[in-house]
Amino acid sequence: MSLSAHLSTDSANAPASPADARPSVAAPSPAERLLVLEPGRADRNYWRDLWHYRELFAILAWRDVSVRYKQTVIGIAWAIVRPLLTMVVFTIIFGRLAKLPSDGAVPYPVMVFVGMLPWFLFSSILSEASSSLVNNAQLISKVYFPRLIIPSATGVVALVDFAINLILLFMIMAWYGFVPNWQIVFLPAFIVLAVLASLGPALLMTALNVKYRDFRFLIPFVVQFGLYVSPVGFSSAVVPDAWRFWYSLNPVVGVIDGFRWCLLGGESQLYIPGFLASLCVVAVMLWIGIHTFRKTERTFADLI
Image (cartoon, rainbow, N blue to C red; front, top):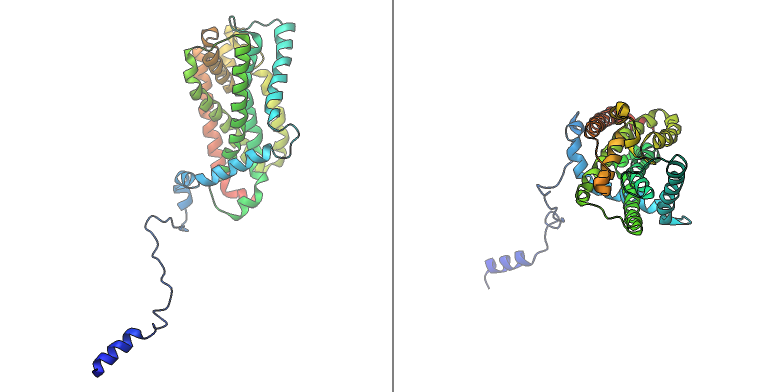
């Protein structure tokens, strides 16, 4: 065999050089997201980051739901007992003692329970979100993500309770032999409206609670006061016509009237001027809540 043949054979069987023995590193995929530290970049891409961190939103929401019913005595039954007892109390006080009328031929307990659905959704989101940032202080001080995810994720717990109460409402309506009309197809839109109506005040209170911790004592008072000034235990039709428009500036009034219009059919009429006023107040409060939250968001890690 020739010398050249031996050299080619040896070179083919020779071990790879140290440079060749290094593990190959795959080039980063073009679709891979890179974290770029640049002044103002987080503000410009804030709403895009909300979608990017959607998995974090799902994880936080699932954690809040599991913690809500973990190590409890009656567990999920609490979501049933509370509205039932409230319905009984309001029916006795407003329906039997005060003799307030119902909407048309609707049984008074059904009318009350329909009004409680959006109110409990509103009050639950407001109460849970107001302390959500303080309760997640360790997460906020260590990792960057849009802080709006935390109070928004707490609303999922309220939606779970809402779904349970909605099933209970249908059972009560079946007990009284009351069947909803075609307007029920608009119910999802009013559910979204109820969530938006609660997010505005919730984001405002959440941001203020980070800086002023005594705001957490204000939330129960606001919830209790709002329960009696909102048409939960009575129909908004009993309000005099001269005051009904101004009464509708309470955003929860339009939401409750919308729920009753959807679920009670023609028995509960929707007061259009007041409903439009409630929509305007909801939009203004939502803008104020988001604006205040975004304005103070960069200071959360330092204050907490």
